[in-house]
Image (cartoon, rainbow, N blue to C red):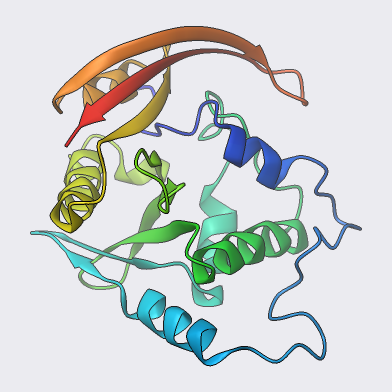
Length: 219
C-alpha cells in the first residue's frame, strides 16, 4: 500500500530547511546556541514552554522532537517514505542531526512545532510539523514509518494537533499539501473539514516531480 506520509509534499519552509544541507555543511545553525551567545530570560521561558508541550490521544503521545529521537527518525525516514515529499531521505545521520537541530532551534524561537509521534509505551511512529505558527494559517505535515501504516495513527495524530491548535483560538485554517498520487494521504486530508486549493507540479532539487494538491483544513 502507498505510504501514509502526508502534507510534506511541497512546502516553501521545508524546501528552505533542506536545500543546501550536506554532510560538510553546518546549515547555519549547529546544535545549541551560537558560541558565546547568552540567552535572554524570555528565550529560556519560551524554550521551557516548548519542551513541556505534549498532546495525549487515545493511543498516542505527541511531543517535541529532541536528540533522543534522532536515530529512529533517521532510520525510518526512508526513500520510500519520502517518495511523494519535497525532501529526500538523509544521506547520513550527521546530516539528519544538522537538519533536525535547525528545526528544534526554530521551534525554540516560536516559529514552528517539530513533533514526534509515539505510542504511550514510547515507540517512535513518525513525525509531525506545524510551520508558521506565529501567523494565522500554519502549514501542517506528517509522516509515519512503514510499519505504522494502515492503523489509523495518521488521522489520530493530525486530529490531535488540529484540535490543540484550534483550542488556542489563534488560527483561521491550516494548509496541508498532498501529492495527488498518494491515495492514503488524500484520504487522510479529506477526513477533515476542508476546501481544495490549487494543484501544482514541481521538480525538486534532487529531480523528483511532485504533483501537489493543497488542502485548506478549516478550524
